[in-house]
Amino acid sequence: MKIAISGKGGVGKTTISGTLARLLSRKGYDVLAIDADPSMNLASALGIKNQPKPLTDFKELIDERAGGPAGFFKLNPKVDDIVEKFGVIGPDNVKLLVMGTVERGGSGCMCPASSFLKALLRHVILNLNSVVVLDMEAGVEHLGRGTTRGIDIMLIVVEPGARSVETAGRILELARQIDIRNFGAVINKAGGNVEEIESRLEGYGIPVIGIVPYDTALVQADMDSIAPVDKGGAALEAIQEICERLVKQEGKL
Image (cartoon, rainbow, N blue to C red; front, side):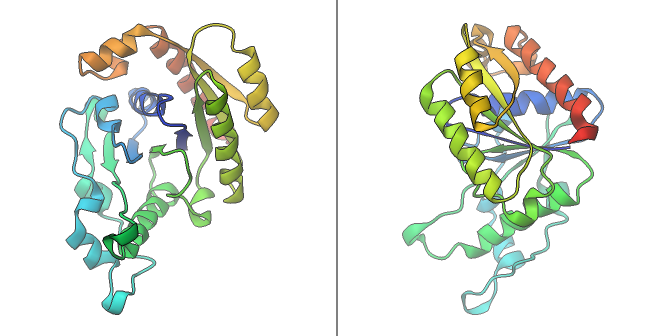
C-alpha cells in the first residue's frame, strides 16, 4: 500500500502522515515514511527526537550517482541502497527518509538532485515491498507519470475553510494530470458541522474518508515534544478509524 498525503500548508497533514505510519506499523506492516515536504517536520510527528539529515545535503553522493560531465545528468541513477543506508528507524520500527529541497533560481543547476529524488521515489513506490507513507507539499512536484501508477491512494487533508477546500480542488486537478486515480479527503481540526465542507469536496469528486476533530491533546503533544500517537485523545481515535478503513480497502485500491 502506497499512500501520498497532501494539502494546504498548516492543515495538519504531517500529523496525519506520522500517526498513520505508526498505526500501520503497529498492525504488523513494514512501513517507510518519506518526508517530501520542505518544512521537514515528519520526524517529530513520528516521535524521532533527532532530525535526520535530508538526502539533498549529501551533495557528493548525488553528484556521484546522478551527475555527469558537462552539465549532463543520469535519468536512472542507482538508488536501490538508499533506504537501507539512510533510513532512520523510529518508534514502532517505522523507517524515515527525509528528501530535502532542491535549490532553484540563481543557485546553479540542481538537475542531478531532482533526478536522484525522482528516481528514489520511483524505486520505493514501484519496487519496495513495504507500506509507504509519503508526506508531500501541496503540489505534486515530487511525482511523475512513471511513479504515480504505484500510488494506491492520495489523501488530501483539509481544515474548515474555503481556501483549504479550494487547494484540495487544485491538488486533485494536478494529480489527475499525472494519472493518480484514487483520492480521499480527511477533514482535520473539525469543530462542528462539516456537512458543507463534505458537500464541496464531494462536488470536486473527493470522497471524505475521515473527520478528525480539533483536539487540544495534539497541541499539548507538540508542546511536550512527543508524537501525537503517544498522546492519545479524540483526534487519535479518529485517525485510528481512518487507518482501519485504509487497511480494509487495501485489496480494492
